[in-house]
Image 1 (spheres, rainbow, N blue to C red):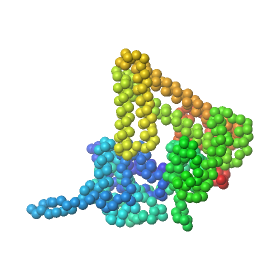
Image 2 (cartoon, rainbow, N blue to C red):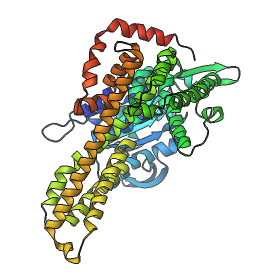
Image 3 (cartoon, one colour):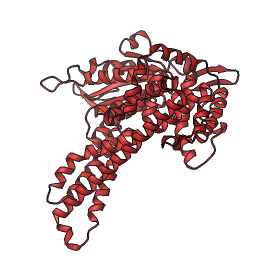
Image 4 (cartoon, rainbow, N blue to C red):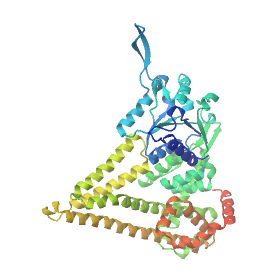
Length: 503
């Protein structure tokens, strides 16, 4: 299965494990909850999906890499304790609480979240001294004398032996106590995640043509050569920051994230080509409707790889703009019920401050629980900033007596919010017009039934952001050309042409 399918399976398993009966007891006792073992190549997103799952389910997450643990840190340190048996006092050895188990309790104390996931990565790389204790842990959920608390589900992960020399293959007895999920690198599944996260367009366009470079492992005379999903994502982040500071992206930078000389060279060449296309076609002008005859002629005469790259650049640009609109719309929609209550209250400023503090509490709780994803952090911080701007707007008073004038504050709050909604509608119209111009250009340059039009309609359909934007705000152009999706033979032919491309 791919990483997206694994995520849904794990999510459903956790839901089942956390179901309770009418007495409030877990229907499946902790000792009978088989730990999940996620087996897959390094860098495909195993850790990332655990953060997403915890955030989506509203539970906590405690993560540990087992390669860093000795028997003492995992089970606890031994100490001598005096005990009396049959009237005789003897010295016996006991163990302090495991560092791992104590982290669970600390997370519950700090966050107030009592259910969660204990995620143990690289579990098949444990030290030789710790290996015998793992069977007891996987079967009874116990480290030393201390059990994993109720409400905590165990998910483990590891790499197959071919990727890691430190791997110790589990025997049948151990494997029989696990739910094993074998996960493979899958570009389409990762691309959907990458689009939503906003990875750099040059990377997505390059991998659309060179899918075999998405995940690459080989042994060369110089050593192991590798390229992973994690490497592409980290490279995207650094390229974006380099571009913000107008620094040059070259092979030296790329090779710090992709460990394969051929892929580094080809992507570096494509990155330069990607930027050249953006300049040659003046993509921002194009989306604003400034479509000259020379631009249409150039695009019409371009090779297939150049045309697909151009469509990719335009799609990435419009997708980012649609995503920004939807984020603003979601924020305004989310705070509306609370603002209605605040607007009708006697002390509007105090009500806003309460909402701001509540948002800060959500951030602090989720952060302490280990379940705050970057996307969720951005959403809550954005809403907090919006509320703080409203509070500042209320503070812009015309006279001292306005301070206690609830009616004026209520009016100001309503005006501020409605102005935000008005600005959002105007921005939405701008993006909708740019989408219209994209369809106009594609039809004029390549034709209404061209492969490029098919690529445009298909990508808008399968992308979560674009599909949601169009379903929310509509697009007459999309409705007009959507019939092209039914032409399956042409889609297959397009795929064959893409596979033959060589940069």
